[in-house]
Structure formats: structure tokens, C-alpha cells
Amino acid sequence: MQLKKITFKINSKEITIEVDVRESLLDVLRNKLHMTGVKKGCSVGECGACTVLIDNVAFDTCIYLAVWADGKEIRTIEGEAKEGKLSKVQQSFLDEAAVQCGFCTPGFVMSTTEMLESGKVFSKEQIKKELSGHMCRCTGYHNIMLAAEKALQPAKEHGSECTGKCHK
Amino acid sequence: MYDIIAYEEASCIEEAIKLLVANPNATLISGGSDVLIKLHEGRMQDAHLISIHGIKELSGVSMLEDETIVIGSGTSFSKISKHPIVQQFIPVLGEAVDMIGGPQIRNIGTIGGNICNGVTSADSASTLFAFNARLEIQGPDGVRTVLIKEFYKGPGKVDLQHEEILTTIFITPDNYRGYGGHYIKYAMRNAMDIATLGCVALCKVKGINQIEDFRLALGVAAPIPMRCTETEQLIKGENFTEELIEKVGKTALKEVNPRTSWRASKDFRLQLVEELSKRAFRQAFKNAGGEQ
Image (tube, rainbow over all chains, first blue to last red; front, top):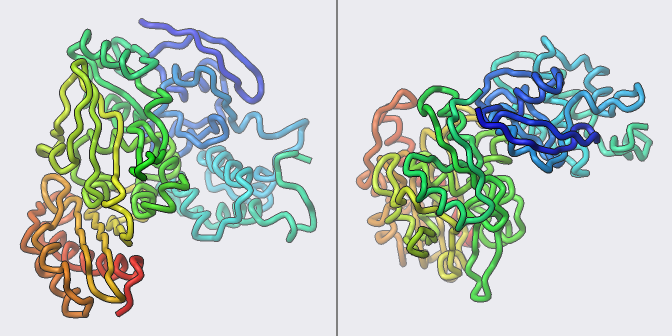
């Protein structure tokens, strides 16, 4: 067994842990850090249920070696609500009842969060493309699309300046 | 847990080569979207991994003084498609790699891995064939370069020794300046799928409708990615007409050698070769500024 000590930020908190070089980041997040909002689905990068943001970019943690997280900043669904208040994306998913069984929801929220924070405007087709790494075999995507569209609507149409970053 | 018996991390290319020399059974891992899946599925066992993941000098897109475009082998697909140099000068490569997998796969997968796998379906490969890309390979004895068409030796086989690393992809200005291009990926799904057939056309137009140069490259139309050189020769110098489009489709058919796989039959792939070659040619001609 080969171990390696790594330091990274998880939801803004810096930690140093020893990981087995054989472990995926998914295994470490779930089993060692108990971030069970990161879901283990296909294990081969096809379903997107294990998606987290690494340096604010969406990655499948099932095909990401844990040792590669050294020095990175990781965000999981557990860190998205601030002071008891859901993020804009989470709130949109809740408002639109954008869940089927809910297993894929954390991943969808993380990818939609990356899109929101990019500041870009997305067409419906572009949203579908950006979320395609989460669509596997379910039929429950209609409300998820509605939620993503709602979260990504330009702030002006909302009559508010909120970009979702501030969690106000 | 992955079936890994040893793991070493290289901080630079030289170190990675030294590690490869010292470990004859080791496997290089960069993005991991192929290697880790092979391990997961048991197609690779007791792996000794040498990681070049995150080596900065392997990642990035830049331009030399003579306007040669330089792409590091460790550059992720999403970095390539979002890069201003790619978008301005070789947009068709950005479009091709933007069709690989889904966003998360494009954030981790690298163009070097896509080529070194040696598979015919690689979305980046056919486009790099069309651009006559030159590959720089570094090994213990120094650096050598090879044209991409000479790099592919057979299905899953490329001209790369165990202790060598593909470091850089070069596209020279004479191979992209003035060209309009178009890539079509045919697959069962719009995302998370492997190409049933991939087709890229590059076109340079003289005046408004004379074909000054034409390049047609295909993936999954043969055991390795290929150029349709006979078709290219026939089209060069001709004026763009509907008959010429038909000729592209019919001639391309004579050059290819697709197989039947569980994804599609040979007959279906032949139909795709004809139809997609025509469509890619038509769009590349338009993108090159041609008018019918």
C-alpha cells in the first residue's frame, strides 16, 4: 500500500490527509470526508453523479485520482448553501421540483453552478450540451432543464443584480 | 480502489522519461479518462502508473513567430476549444474536440491521449490529419518529429516507444491559413458517444468558387484515421458545382475500408462516408468564403 499526503481546500476549508494512491477522489470524498452528496453512479465518467468543482471547473471524481487533488480547491454540494440559505442554483432546482429520484441532483447543481459563475448567457440548446455529462437514462430531465434555465436567466430579467455568487 | 501497484508523479518531461526508462512495465497517465476506465473494467491489471497529469509545460496553446500553432499534448479538450488561437485560426479543431464525451470528460481528457491511444474514432485525429499536424516526441535520446499520418501504425498502435512521450502538436501556417473547415461526427447520441463515423473537410477557395485546395479526412472509415488523397486530387482546381459534390462522395467511397462492428455495419458506414463527405465539403467551401 502506497500512501501520499496531500493538502487541498474542500468547501473553503484547508485540510491535509493521507490518501492511498489507488483511491479515486470520489472514494476519498465519500469514505474519508463523508461528503456523501457526491454520488457514486457509473464509476466510468458517464453519468456525472460524482461531479464536483475543482478550481471552479466541473470534473467527474470517479475518474480522478485522489492524489491529483493536491493543492486544488474543491467544491461539493455540501458547501453550496451558506448560513442556512440555499444557493441560487439549489433554490431554482427546489422551485422547479427538478428531481426524479434525486441521485443525480448534486452533480447537476454543481455543473449549473459552474455555468452560472461563468457569467455567460446560455441558450436552451447550450444548456443541454453543458449538462449532457449528467444525462444517462432517466426520463426526468424536463424540470431539470426548467431549473437550469431559471438559475441561468440573466439577472436583469429577475429585476435583481444577484449573480448567485453572493448567496444573498 | 484502482488496481494500482505503484504510482509515481513526474514534475517535468525529463523526469517522466527517466521514470519510464527505469520502469519497463509502467504506463503513462495524463488525463486518465482512458487509463482509469481500463483499470476499472479490469482490462489493465497491477498497473504501475507514471503520472504526467498537471505538468505545466505539456499544457497550453501558443503561436510561434512564423505563426505555427503549438498545442501541448497535455492540453485538455475544453482548453483547446475555448482557446482564442484555436477559435481564430483553426476553429474546426475546436469544434471537433468539443464533440468528445461530455463537458466533464472534455475537462480531463487530453489531445495527446486521444492520439496516442491509436484509435480510429478519435475526434481530434481526423482533423489533425487534415491539418498535416506534426508531432514532437521526446525520449531518452532526444527529440524527434513525425507527421501524424506516419504516427498511426495500426489499430491501437502508434509510433511511440515505451520510454517516449508525445509532447507537442504543431500546425504550420501553410496548413491552416486561408482554409475553411467543417467537422461532422455521426453518433447515436449528441453527447457521451463514440463516433460511428467522423468526417472533416478543409477547403481553400480561389476567386469565388474555384477549389484551390481540398482536404478530406475520415475517422472509423478504416482501421486508422485516414485522408482521401485520391478524392482531394480530383477536386483540386475544379469549380464548385453540385456535380463536384457528388464526385467527392463517390470517389471517397473507393478509398475507404470501414468494418462492421457492434456500433454499425460496414454498409451503413459506407453510406455515411458518402453523405458526410458531401456535407462536410459543402460547408467547408462556404466557410472558406466560397459562393456557388
